[in-house]
Length: 311
Image 1 (cartoon, one colour):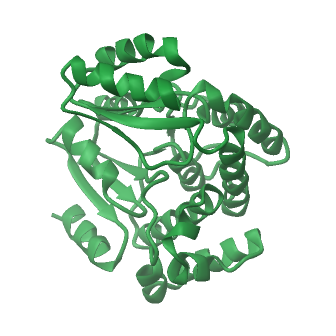
Image 2 (cartoon, helix red, strand yellow):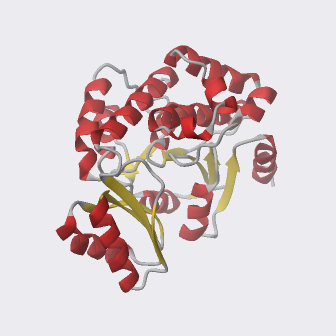
Image 3 (tube, helix red, strand yellow):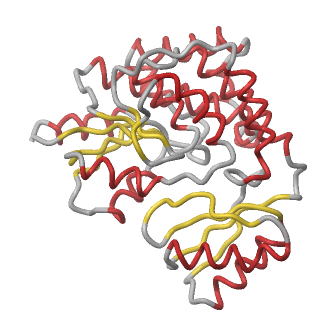
């Protein structure tokens, strides 16, 4: 049998009610939500399960609730005896990857990502920045679009998700221009994303620096499971590199596709998306449809995953 990778969801996967069914069926999942509430000083269950989607959409709420739900699903998988050989997370999901690896304590991670969300939100006033998804152009073509649109302001590739799907980030006027240029170059679609800021571009460097100061007060530990980071699309070599990479990640491109290909090259043939949604599973099928792909977000998907792993 090949190797197993756990992939952890990023921002945008949140949904009211996420994790509730797992918590009702597994004590370890319920305890995870309780631990998050203790760490953050508010009722995470209430916000995540009974709140409204607008409140959950606020970045400093989105980030800790996704990490909590993803960790709850992770712990259920661990309890079932499923262990990964390598872990990775899309942007925010990298924090859950560190929790899985043992390099970050859960309570430290949820407090960190709440502040990360706050700093990212505050760095650029709403409306000044924007993001867009460019569909069906190559990475090189998207980089060219960004270069041309940079005459109108900051415009940079933000997420290299999978072949033909790249998001761009920067100042609103430049992003609009980038979409126009992309369509002229033959993009099937170039659409603005419903996000509250220009994530993963140089406009968020200040937010990363603030996060870096928060990271100074947090302990990191040796990684028990190898972690692939978004910044380099490669393994983190030492725990001494973790803080610098998490700081840099806020304003750097997410090299997701390259990271997945690195894992495949190292013998990973089974990928389990852990946490809300199935976005990463969708990317996986476009990167390499020969891979076995599962997801765990509720009891049904857990049972399907366990059955699939035993085939």
